[in-house]
Image (cartoon, rainbow, N blue to C red):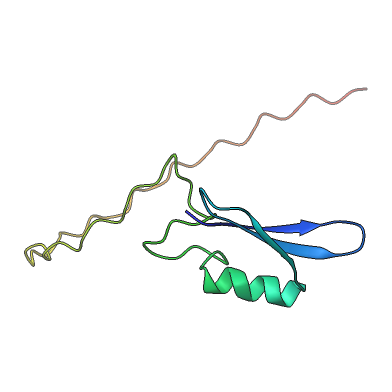
Length: 96
């Protein structure tokens, strides 16, 4: 798994690319260059079927393969439930 991080100090900003078992690759980049690197490695937003920083691995469930469409049985429409009316709150006694 590749890990890409933005590193900054007082004077420069860097992009660090970390691979397991390899030395870290850290080099100076602008915000634009860092954004492009994230896009290239698909770390810029969630993508279908790609595990990146936007995937919660504790709750990750791969998307199932598309199943055959169910039989075309028309569903019966149900009438919406009538909402119960709330009673107004009792009036507070007036102070004299």
